[in-house]
Length: 463
Ligand code: OTN
Image (cartoon, rainbow, N blue to C red; front, side):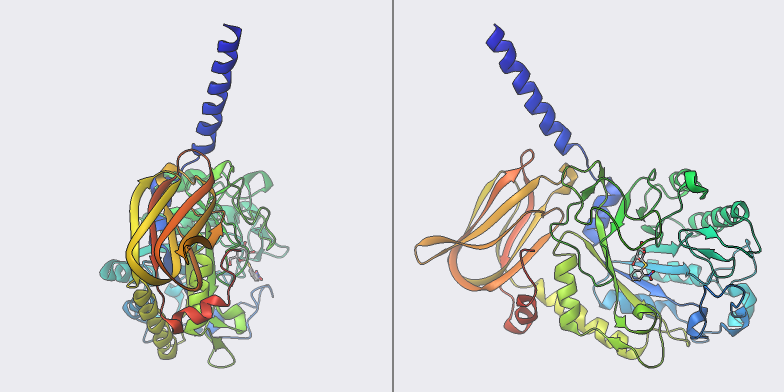
């Protein structure tokens, strides 16, 4: 009896441990966001019209009168994003200057004081309408952490000399966010650049507002008590670390600093908080986020492809920064590069040679019928049931033996790995370590054409 009870306790402990380890799950918003994979983020601000402006030189902010993007066309922006393969798009509605791209009632530093459309325009409204028109899910960035007009520096602290106190600033933040989160419909993603100053440190209480107004949006670096959090990957190069677990013990910085803890996440982490890899198409002035007529460079399609593999291919979403020039358009050369990249992405999706979907278990074999050349594997977990894989290996049958072609740890929504081409009639996926029974949404092997493969072989495939 004693032994029986001990055994029962052991079995219960094991069951409990497994349940514990698989019970941190994504919300439906998280799942939809992971499925969206590629997004775009648009930047346009007063600094485009006055490139010498430094928002930290308090009291030197440019007049709203210089803002006149006379050919502004948000349809063109969204079409450019779509041509690159984006399924969602985020508008920077207020960056560090504090100038607001919608006619906020909180203060006069906005489009309503500009000559653009005689002060009657609303870029947020136009942008959301264009997203709807072209089927992209809309998001809004309006960080609380910096505001040149109101003398606010990271992480959302009012500086000496400001025309407003911290409490007044918090009220302005809440008012502006209430406008943005109430007047433009459901948002797919909300961005807090640099995090949000915690309430205990004197910041605005935003989690209840999010819950009330946008309960289904995912929140980049939101307040730690908010739902649907996502985190930063720690760089602006489109390079998620590997492993890159969807779970974590914290969201990233709530302090506005660049360094973040636990960059890889934690497979046993307390919250579901996957990474988003944001990076701009351009490099140079203003980090490449904002347009300038000269002196910037653009990423090549090879570099964009590498970034896709080190973001989406490492269980992160890819958020590509697109500039808007002073005429109010995505420059033609950027548009051309974006659509070239989009065509490459589409082409990649057409190279599948064999695969399986929606299977549970730890070992799967793919019979390819006859010998085929392959150089890529794609593994997806059904993350609705959590992230269960901890270590895996993919082998191909070559010269009468199983040979390892890929191996790794985190998978999550998607893992892509490329390797030197091999010819094989069958492939197997073995999950060596897991928490609970792995749920495989998809396991696919494919052949990438040599020009596409070449730049990818230069990135490390397992780290
Ligand atoms: O100067 N910066 O603020 C900066 C330089 C290089 C890379 C990032 C930053 S800011 C950084 O932006 C991230 C999004 O790209 C996150 O919001 C981080 O929290 C923020 O510190």
